[in-house]
Length: 418
Image 1 (spheres, rainbow, N blue to C red):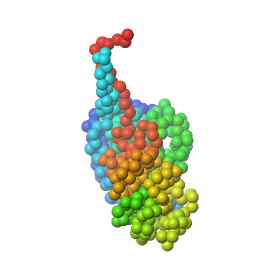
Image 2: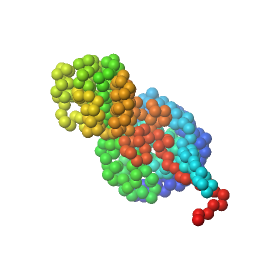
Image 3: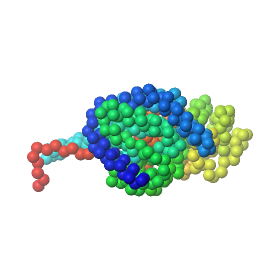
């Protein structure tokens, strides 16, 4: 049964991808606007479905961070619709001439952007990913097969029906976006191992165990990240008020997202000046601090960190803190324990910032800004499927442009090769 269901999705997706690749930008944008309208109009249905998911999640004992990612309210539903419209408002990622040159023999060669084809997207908890992923795939001319988590099944299905309504209204093949209709985990295994003839790439979005499974089992290329162990480094030239405000936001704005700060590093020469106010703000907000021996001496309520803390993605109101000798030690700590996601330096020293930008090998590096800006919407991409920490094809926020490849278009006038 799983094999038949999944193969049917694959056949339909490949057919839809061929048609979607030649649609006009207007037709794809019309589908997106119609989908956004449907989400607003059917908000009650979406919230009712989400209430079912939330009740079942509480009965299953889902952690608070997981429930926060799962929960929808009127504001989040509106944000989904607005996000789809923002994607529609982006420039067309298809048909862009990325490079052009003429050869001595008169051949004119262009590198032109094209869709990837069929994208499988596997995600957990956040039902808004259903809307974001579908919108980005539609905008970039890719057919999508979506597989949401079992905990968000009802919410995702309700959102999917709105997307499908918009696609049909615009005259696009309804199978341009499909959703796996079962919560059976065997469907994920089959998608990863046995659908290479239908899928061109898989994008996982979720927890460490999901992403590791996808990376281990997939037989097609994967765009994804394993963890978001993000750092904020307080350089000796950091402004104290800025350090406090940025760290508080980076950790506590939303603790359960991959861009949340998990470790704060502080220059020893500025620790007495910077650390107490930062720690007090975090503690007042309900955050547990796990510090090294020097941090524990400066912060009474800090508990001793273990070696494991430096490589832990808490996704909760917990943060680790370490005092370092200087920028060299901070960069080395990030290299040793970071996940290549997002790091921020707080400093008024532009030379130090440039050094940090150059030497820290992460997908996103910031100066004097919260790590929670690691988000496609905040980058002006309208939305994102995830933050890619690999080095092949896409890195950082994966938006519509990152879901394209290219082909070469060569124009001649009768040339033959000698």
